[in-house]
Structures are given as C-alpha cells and as structure tokens.
Image (cartoon, rainbow, N blue to C red; front, side):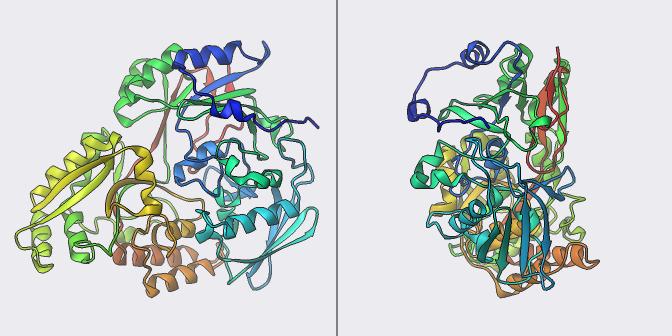
Amino acid sequence: MTSRHRLAPLAVLAVAALTLTACSTAQAEGGAGADDTSLTWGWNLPTSWDPVTSTAGWDTHALALVYDGLTQLDTEGEPVPGLAESWDYSADGTAITFHLREDAVFSDGTPVTAESVKLNLERGRDQENSTLAGQLRIVTGVDAVDDHTVTVHLDQADYQVPYLFAGKTGFIVNPAAFDDVEALATQPEGAGPFALTEYVPNAHATLEKNDEYWNADHIFIDDLSVVPVADPATAVAGVSSGQWDVSIIPAAQAEAAETAGLEVEVIKALTVRALDVNSTVEPFDDQRVLQAISHATDRQALIDATYFGHGTPNWQPFPDGYVAHNDELDDLYPHDIDAAKDLLSEAGYPDGVDVTLTLGEDDTALAELLQAQWAEAGIRVELNVQAAGSLAQNYVQRTFPLALDSYSGRQSPLQALEVLYGPEGLMNLGRQTPDELTAAIDVARATPTDDPEYAQRLQDAVEVGVRLQPNTFLFSWPRILIHPAGVTGIQHWLDVQRWEDVKIEG
C-alpha cells in the first residue's frame, strides 16, 4: 500500500495571488509525470471539507472526490455498492447490516473497518455542531460485528438508509483525523477516488488519484484541480482556452458554449430554486401570506428571463419524473394576481404588505424580477444582498426570515424532507414540524422501497409538507456542464457528479 501524509497546514493556509492561468500552469509544471492525465474542474469549493460540518447540500459534489459513502447512487438515483459491497435488513426493518469491502482503505493506506464506520456514524449523530444530526437521529446504536461487518440499529423500520448513506451522511472519514476534528474543515482524510494535496481557500483545491481506491481501475484522471469560476461569463472562454477542462455554467451561457463548439451537458438534477421562510416571524406566520406570494409569482417568466428557458415551474422540492414528485401538486398556486390580493386581504393586509427578501450577490436579476412581480399584488419588497457565506450561515443562525435560495436534493427523498421540514432541518428556519407531517414521513420511511405502496406513501408525505410548511418552491433547474470534445465519459448523474470512466483524449 502507498502511504500518504496528512496535508501540511502551510499548504492549506497559504494565501497566493493566483490567476486562473497561473493555477493551470502550476498544475501542468508541478509534480505530475509527463504521462499523467490532469483535469481542471470549474466548480464551487465546499463550505467545509468535513462532511459533518459542511452546511451546503451542493458541497457533496466536491466532498465525493475525497470521501466514499457506504453506498453510492447510480444515474437513476438508486443505491449501489460503495465502501459496503452488500447489505441486508432485519425482518422488522429496524436494523441494517453492511458488509464492507475487504480492499477498502483510506488514502493513507489504513483499512476501512467496521469500527471506522461506527465512529463516523456516532460522530455525525452526536457532535454538537453536526449538520447531519437530524438525519442520524434514527440511529440508536452501531455494532462492529467483525472487521468487515457493521450493524446499524434504528429507532423504527427505515428502508431509506441505503439511499441516505450514499451522501454526506454516509461519507466515511479516517478516524485518525478525529484527534483534531476542526482541521478536517481544510484537511480531509477519506477513502474516496482522490486525496487532497493542496488547498487555498477561495482559490483552488488540488487533488491526486488515490491508487488505493477500491474502484481505482475506473478512475483515469491522475490529477484533478477544483477552481471556482469567479465570473460565470468567463466560463466559455476559459474552457475554450484550456483554463478549465470541465466547467459548470449558468443557463445564460449555454448558447455561447454551443457556438464556441463545446459539448454542452444539460443534466437533470435534484435542484430547485426556493424561498426559505421562517414561519415564526410576521407576516410569514400566516400561511395565506405565503400562498399570496406563490400566486404572485410567474414561475415561467422567471425561467425565461433568468435561466433562458432551462427549467420547469415547480411547487414542490422534486423534479417531474422523480419517484417523490407528486403530480397533484403541479400548478398548485398558479400565477393569479387577484387571488394573491384576496389572500393578503383575508390575512389582514388589505393595503398590501412589506417584506425583506435576502439574497446572494449572484441572484440580483432573479430577485429584482420577483420584486416586480410581487409588487403587482401589493407585496412591497426590500432587497437585502448578502455575501454567499453570510447567506449560508442563515441555515444555522436563522437571521433572515425570507431568503432566496437553491435547494440541492439529498440522496434519500425522505432525507430531503427532513432537511426541508424536520425539527432540525437546515432549511426549516422556524424549526417547527406539524405532527401530521411527521406521521406521513414515518409511514413512508417504514415502507420497503420495493413495496407497491412506497411511491404513493412518499408522495403523500410530500403533499403534506408542501401544503403545511412555509418553504416556497419556484422552479427546477438542470446542472449544465461544458467541455471540449476531447473530454469523454461524463455521465448524467441525477445526484453527485462523479468521475468514473471520464477520460481526456488528444
């Protein structure tokens, strides 16, 4: 086995004035051999490299470079083996046993054991600042049966666990790092396809292939750099010039990418534009005000003006065609200014209402269009623009009662509902959950996924959440990646964008 030392703190904390070209040049001239394959990915860096303290669902894409879950999801969103090569439930569904791969190791060469899994699940459940605690509160105990067998005991029958453990909740960190868990924010230690070798916050992350990864035979990239795209308008030019090999782009750049001769991958994803709402704060404590906001919103106009037609109006957290999507919620609150005014009047605001909408710096155009639409119904909006980091902290601090956000779906649809609606859910700003919703989620959770009633029970829970909770959904939107023709093998993953079988030719 190869041995890899922990990322040096100086490499983490160094502050360098690197242009994107300089990053690319450094990658080409660094320690990589002449035959190594290098790829630069224009993407977002995570809020934390520690899956337990990461605050954004979007982080999963970057974290999956260095961590592997007990399971993974295939392109259809169904669980397949990860660090565990198989699993089985007890007869009553209250325990699940995972059988770990004997060849699964962390990037420093130490084996992934049942005790490693036990320590990780307990940390995610019990650590004070864990953002995973809400999803892991179902775990009542973990038994390391032997080195490669671990049984997870649950507080009720729960057949969502194989989905749940495909993402951050199931990402396994090397327990050797637990002596200094705060360092994990910048120095990840996992058993994924790559290992982090250099990290400059807000600038770039450099990784190299983990030759000990159990699926290393399907990883054809030797060195991978993640470099944020500071200005989306430069993405097409950057990929064309070779600054990035693959880049995320906004819908506004798709036509320009095609004109430039680049490949454009429009990937259906579990992403929805949404309004986070704290229903314990006036005027959002009256459901009629939220219904008025929804009726005052012309969702298709939002898509056409700000996403250039790439999107679908939505009133729920899941896209059309996904197992949890409830068709009965389509067009739940159609664009109707008169209906919005009537609802405001019924709620005690016959002369309209004043609200403050908090948004990130990149969402000004969308927020201004919402501001204009809502004004027609008497909803007067003051825009409060915040830096991206401040907006992300709203999940914990709950400073802003109405925020324009993006929701990235979770690996399990019921996990997604917990994040949105659960009493500890990050996007449940009011931290209130009606008993009716809790019961509906519990019924769906206790239903085996191969049961004929599973889909309907899941959709029933979605309907209860949408009708009773304050979160307001606007439209689903795709993940759009661009790359030159020489980059091949990019698959359309519904969930995390993975790199198995991706090659660079020519």
